[in-house]
Image 1: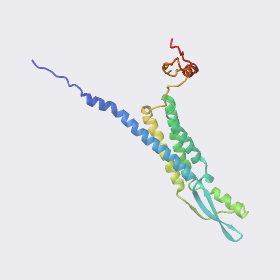
Image 2: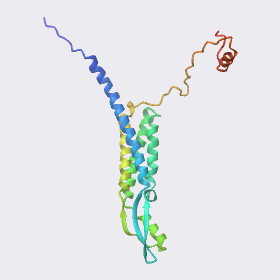
Image 3: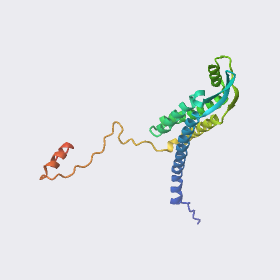
Image 4: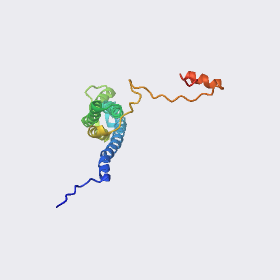
Length: 216
């Protein structure tokens, strides 16, 4: 007679397999928080820097002109704030709400990338400043040059986009804000402390707390 022995899974291997999703969720959460916060900070910083410069001919001389990223387009800074708010809101919602907020986070990052790259070579604001400085509406900017800050803003948007994609992929494993005190749930009440009847101040304190000082 032959005996067939069934393979019994090792308890440690089962525990390791069960803990793997939790570890991946914690890692993705840390990476998403870092990328989202860093990306928003980078995009906001880049939008305040000089994106282009040139000169305008005024009274026979060269008048220097510069424009910041916020002068060219306000989209990166606005979407950076939206993305930062969405990153925080991811932990305040659950299920379908978390997916929607994560999608908003990813779209904010993608919008920053597109807006920064499109505006990287935009000369219209400098031309307007040249026309104002020279008094000639047809004046154009000379010695035009662009900086690398638009691409830095795009990099910040890419980090926010990555945070959004991580939230879409692993957000279901991330913790949410505690619903302990949500509407419809009672707050836990502490057990009444014994009151010394010979100390009137403790009786009054118990009454203020809504407790029965007699203990009945």
